Amino acid sequence: MSEGACIIASNSGALDYIGLAAINARLIRKHLGIPVCLLTTDKNSHPDFDEVVVIDDRPSSKRSMLKGDAHITYEWKNDHRIDAIDKSPWTRTLLLDADYIVASDMLRPLLSCDQPFMIIDKVYDVTGRNSFARMQRMPDGSIDQRWATVMCFDRSAKPVFDAAAMVRRDYGYYSAMFGFSLKPFRNDYAFTIAAHLLDIPTVPFNMAQLPADCAVTADDRGLKITYANNILRWQGDLHVLNKDVAIDPSILEPLIG
Amino acid sequence: MTEIRAQARAAYDRNLAQKNLAERMGARMILAHAGGLWRCDQEFLATLNCYLHDDEIVLLDDQGIPRKVQPLELFTAAKMRNQEIMNEWLVAYAELAKVRTAKDV
Image 1 (cartoon, each protein chain N blue to C red):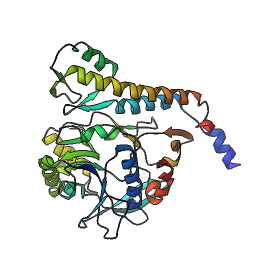
Image 2 (cartoon, one colour):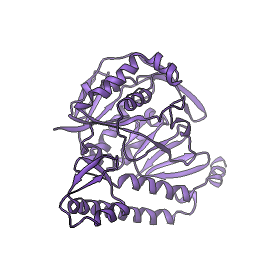
Image 3 (cartoon, rainbow over the protein chains, first blue to last red):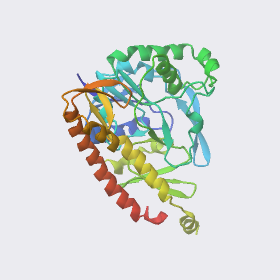
Image 4 (tube, rainbow over the protein chains, first blue to last red):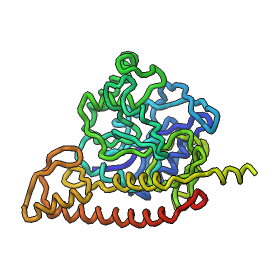
């Protein structure tokens, strides 16, 4: 049995997701000791990864994010995740967002567990402002929302991906049913519905998440986060929503050590 | 001047830093064993300690799945993981305790 991580990344405008994934690949090897595969629509060579799988382009949608006091708009290419089970070269895969920074071994046990599929259940705001409270449940409040940022699966998890593909196919129907916007497509919603349909166990810890209005720098002591006149030091795994790390991934290089 | 003003206003929340540390270390307390995931906290070690003379028992793992385990083997691995993380926690806690103001962060 082979095990490894997969990161789906394609550049979009000023956002260098492949550069961010390359830094993350080095962090994954350092902390988890597993090989990393890049799933990308970019046909160029990518020597920073152990494997590269070129995937077909899919329709994207525009997304707006806070950057400092302004907003940036970019093409959000995000619905490849559903195809990851067929594209991953590993029999046991840890699928991560490019902006999920691996800085510890906490995800390692997921690879040794016998559950065919696991997904993040809860997130917390490391700034203590509880920014994601409204995202704990689906917009209509019916079921808990899962987070597709981190998923671990093996080849037998196909029914989960089939269910998520069904949601993608009939997204209009599910958006009306659960009260979410038709655009942009959200993997979190597709996998939330799939996980509830199939009663999937969740990862037994909460994911640390950083709101988009926080600025991030890094040095040999970890990440330094500034927000609303506050300063915070962070030394663990973190899902960073601020797009500065995707515009200039070299910010994170000191973490590699 | 702007920089001096920003430095003067900068705040550091010590309680939040300790709370985040507890969350982070708690997440790392997970151990994979016998196909399941186990949270190696003090309560779990105490539970396992009750069964050390049994060859095989059934316990609920952290995802609520019953699993057959050899208690001594799991206890040894769980204790090791617990102490590995607790030692890191101790060091990180002491580091955080030294930070008094935003400029020390």
